Each structure stands twice: as structure tokens, then as C-alpha cells.
Length: 338
Ligand code: PLP
Ligand code: COI
Image 1 (cartoon, rainbow, N blue to C red):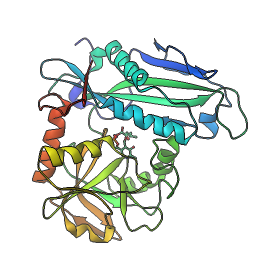
Image 2: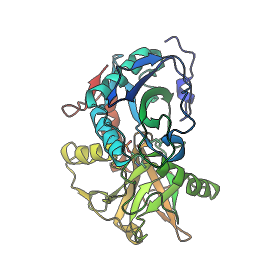
Image 3: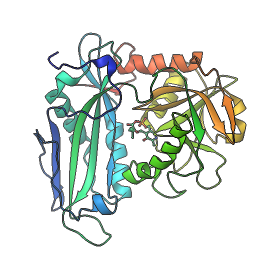
């Protein structure tokens, strides 16, 4: 490995890597796209992405297996979700094959940045689409850029598999029929202030309740919530304003098919946290982060433990992690080898 990186010290921070992929949409179609060295974009000062938030992004990881192979986890699902986000903010579709090809090109061109097996680190891919070109009124842009760059990363929440505590936010990240289910930047801009308040209070992040009634758990910062009931069911919230997490749907499948658990997507009432013996946050960046406790109205509700991960969360983690790093056989179609 020629890169001088201390893989075990990586957090979730930007680092310029060698090449990124850029494709431009103009006159109704995407161009062929190319790998470029420059990590700066030159765009019109009037781009809709800058003024009206016409943009969206994705996040997926690249894993090195024990025998040195490099693999992607369910990139087709990220491509489909990118397209759902694009449609919500009136941007053109990106063909799934072109999305995956761009990811593969970026990984091949930056293969030295894929962390070695056993370090726990991964290469994070950040595809995004932005509206660019000259424009002034609130309307879709005349041109778009699709970019994929990559950064080697470690854990998103400090501590990895050590439980962390969260606090319930009084703020919303999205509206009931707004853009919560789309991965658009505005949702994340709206989350920065509540996140800051949570960190100031000593929590890893905040949990959002449903924006209509503030009674049901929705998101755990930039991750989805799951809980394990006392009778071993895997429960995760259902709502139109939650980002449909690919990790969450993967865990639902694994819980059912690999671990024989019952699985349910339904309301999770913040007043009924007692129904869970374990809880966690799941997402590409978060992987599975065990939730030690949740603070709500001045009281900390502790699940399994603030210090140790619960046994079912651990089993789910081992199964998912094993599949992603090639140690456990994956369901058909989940792994794309580079
Ligand atoms: N929820 C939000 C708001 C997110 O930003 C993410 C990350 O993409 C997730 C959930 C988890 O989604 P995924 O598992 O597809 O990464
Ligand atoms: C993810 O890809 O899991 C994220 O949501 C990343 C976050 C930094 C927005």
C-alpha cells in the first residue's frame, strides 16, 4: 500500500484523493463522464444548487476483503435512491448502470486508498447531483453535474461499537410531506443547529420525532433507528419523512432470513421506549451504533447498557459487517466486486 495513512486513526473527515468522476447533463442528456484530478468545481454564481438547494447526494462504502478483493455493498440501491431524490427536486435521472460504473471507476482509480482488511476502515464514496448553469428564478437548472469522489473513513460516531447516548430534539429536520425521504442537502442544513445543541448537552447527536405530532421516533441524526423488543423482535419506525436507509432494509432482511427474528416496520412511540431491551442507530456512515440511552424531557432512558453492546445488536453487527467485508456469504446481488 503506497499511501502513508494511519488507517486505524481515521475518523469521518475529508481528505483529497487522487481522482474523481464528473459527468455533465446538458441539452437533455448526460455526457460520457471522465475522471479528473481537480477537486474544485467551477460553476455559475447563479446555480440553483447554491440558491435553491437543488441538489442531492448519496453515501456508500467500499470494503477490502481478507483475500484483498475490493467490493461495493448494494450500489444499485444507492442509485435508485439517488433517482428518487433527483425526481423530488426536479433533476434528471442518472441511469443505474452509469452510477455503478462511475463508482467502480473512482474505486479503481483510487484503489490505494481502500483501507486494508482488518483495520475496520473503509473507502466512503460520495456521489452527488447539483443544478448548475445560469439561472435566476425558482425553477429547475438548465444543466447538472454528477460527481463521485471518495475518502477513506473510520467510525462516524466516536467509539464505533461502544454505545453512545442521544437526546430528543425539539426541532424537525423535515416536514410531514416535505423532503425527509429524499437525500437532499436542505434536510442536513436543517439538522446542523439541533445537532450542535445536542453535542453541547453532551450527546452524540439528536433524535428527531415525527414532525406532525412529535410523539414517534423518526431519525437518529443521519441514521435510522431500530429497537429490539423484549420478545426479540426487530422494530424500526415507518414514516414518509424518514430517509429509507439501505442499511436498515438490509438489517431487516438479515434479522429475518439469517437470524430468524420477527421484523416489523411500524410506529415507535417515544413514550414507550420500555418496550425495547436494545436499540441502535444504523446507516452507511454509522454502520450499527448501539444506543446506550435516550434523553427525553430531562430523563435518560437506558436500554441494554451505556457501556456494552447488547447481544442481539452485536449479532446483527457481526452479520452485516461479515457480509460487507466478505467473511459471511451475502444474499444474491448484494455485492459488486470491483
Ligand atoms: N437517515 C439519514 C438522514 C441519513 O443521512 C442516512 C445516511 O445515508 C441514513 C438514514 C442511513 O441510510 P443508509 O443506510 O442508506 O446509509
Ligand atoms: C451516510 O452516508 O450514512 C450519511 O448520511 C452520511 C452523513 C455524513 C450525511
